[in-house]
Image (cartoon, rainbow, N blue to C red; front, side, top):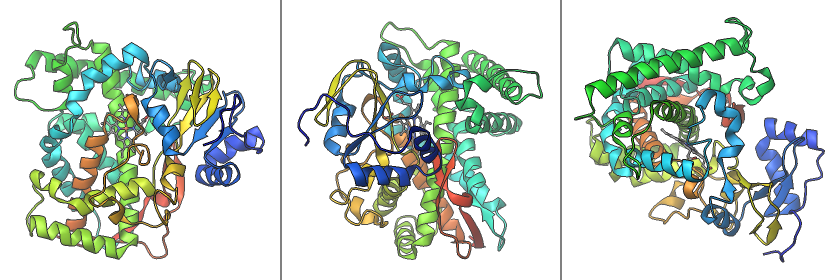
Length: 448
Ligand code: HEM
């Protein structure tokens, strides 16, 4: 560990404007370059932003994830998402307000609840596989997005099958797409110049979603939540320490947040998982053997998902090798010592998911896909952090891991897929996530 120093870790020598360009276009190559030159900690500096201090040693990451949430703020860096997510969004809040929303939401995302969503996850995937063309190349990305969207609309929003499901899904898909709009990251462009102007269209979709959600919440309050297990029903039942329920505005903002945080992230991770599994026939064969041993020729039953250690290890290994977000971020509200550096208030601290996951002393031959690393192993939360950590750890982690297993098991059992000839997955930016290039093109040779 370096000796305590009162300055920031070594700044990268790359000019500031070039740093932003590299971050936008080749973030992993840029991070590799900085780590090769400067080691475990270094400072990036984008124009007009506070210094961004990147850490990749588990000891420093532990300090960030176990540090005082009063000092380490995550919400304020996301303020630019306010026009879409709303001011009550879990992603935007800090301190007591964050803790209140998080406590209200946590019970709905408890690991034990996931089994009740398994049937929907499996059926939605089955229906998607039924639609896929045989012997013709297609990109998996839009298919996986359609699956994760419908799963959220049914299990989180609690919309049942029927015409309302299609209407809701269409509206929310348009809305979720605006999450990739460059305008979202550039507030000066957010000017409503009428229904045909770019931000005007986004603003109208936001209003339509607000109206639809308000109507849905009113309907569900009137109907009551008895016998329902969806996330919205649990949010309607939740009470804070004063016995108060969530307000309509809070419900709206959290529903939209869960959609935006949970839909594309899971679809993109599934795209990486299939790209890696199909490129490694030995891994595909072991998953297949495990599925046959557990489920025979029948459909995968919810209780069987817990009996698939190799599939579970594969999912964790894919999230290690192919994290969809390179870093998580906290803004320091007071000076703090991290990794031997006395950091001043105002800097942004970034535990680096990508660089930590590529450390050879933690993961020998870090560039190889080796699910065995996670078989029967205890997962160190400061060395494996695709879902971030501490009081800000992804609230949907259990949901996403479970959904990835059910969707992968269903696809791999039903569809004989191969990557299109010559395809090698490269990293492509899609909004804030890093996705496999070309949307993972595949051919389906047979369907069961
Ligand atoms: C493979 C899929 C997913 C990945 C890789 C992922 C990753 C992440 C990461 C890195 C964070 C930030 C954590 C931090 O700052 O320490 C986060 C936060 C969050 N995620 Fe996920 N996520 C996924 C799926 C989901 C799903 C399915 C949902 C909900 C249905 C969800 C809801 C959220 C929410 C609400 C937060 C904010 C938590 C807070 O600030 O307290 N995510 N996620």
